[in-house]
Structure formats: structure tokens, C-alpha cells
Amino acid sequence: MSQISIINAKTKDDIAAVKAVFIDYMAFIEDYLGQSLCFQGTDAEFATFPDIYDALLLVRLDGEAVAACGIKPFKPGICELKRLYCRPAGRGHRLGQRLTERAISQAKTLGYSQMFLDTDAGLTHANKIYEALGFKDIDRYYDNPMGCSRYMALDLKD
Image (cartoon, rainbow, N blue to C red; front, top):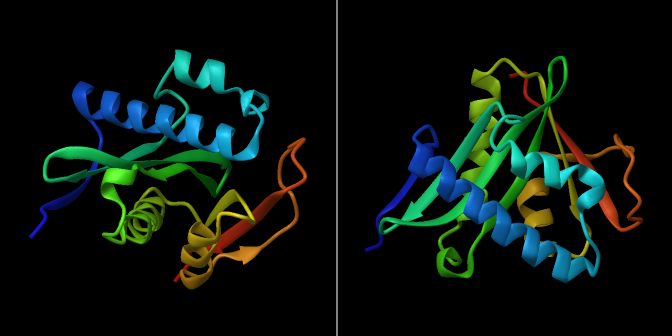
């Protein structure tokens, strides 16, 4: 049986592991979309990593870093779920759902009342997770030149 741990990345090594997963995510999503995400300020994000995040979550499977996501402040009371990605080596263990659930819990602990995210409608597995956890479609909440994005929000108040 596989050993799975989901942690708040705090150490230098764990933060570096999250950054590596995020870089893999960037390569995956830019290849999938056929365009760069530089409009999101990714150069500055990675140059000062992890400064823009309130929390980083890391999943290890049998000791190997396989998935991660970040919680980023958006505006008072609202955070964004960012860069959620599971490497191929971690797939098949429901890590995307488990990681999203942990991020929701962490955002509540941090005092947020809402969580926003953007995704691509074609990423059906991710969309199913978000829908199952109660995320609802919302209007575009930031300037995004890509027309294929789907914007969602979750009310974090119990």
C-alpha cells in the first residue's frame, strides 16, 4: 500500500519541491493550451517564490513529491487556489481531490470566506473535482486573454 502525506510546505526542501511541481504544471498547461501564462506574472512569481502565497501544500507519495497547490490572497476575505497539479507518477490515488479538500480547509483556517479558481473547461477531471466539492461558476474575476477559461468560486463559510 502506498504511503501518502499532504503537508504545509515550510522547509526549504519542501518549498523547492512545490516550486518544481509548479514548474511541471506550467509546462503541462502551456503545452495543453498552446500558449504562455506569462500574462499572470509568472516570471516575477517564480523569481520571488514563494512570496505571493499564504500557503503551499505538497503531496508526497512514498516519499516522492507528486502534487502541489498554492493558496494566494486575492482581495480581503478571498483567496485563489493556484497551480494545483499532480504529476503522472501520482495519478490514480485521488490526490487532486484530496489536495483540493486540504486547500479548502487551510483557506478556512487562514480566515478566508471565499476561494476563487480558474481552470480550462477541457480539463474534465479537474472540473469534476471542483464541481463535486461545491465550486460554482462565476464571472471572470481577472484580466485573462484566454477565452477558454472557466472561473469558479466556493463559499468557505460553514
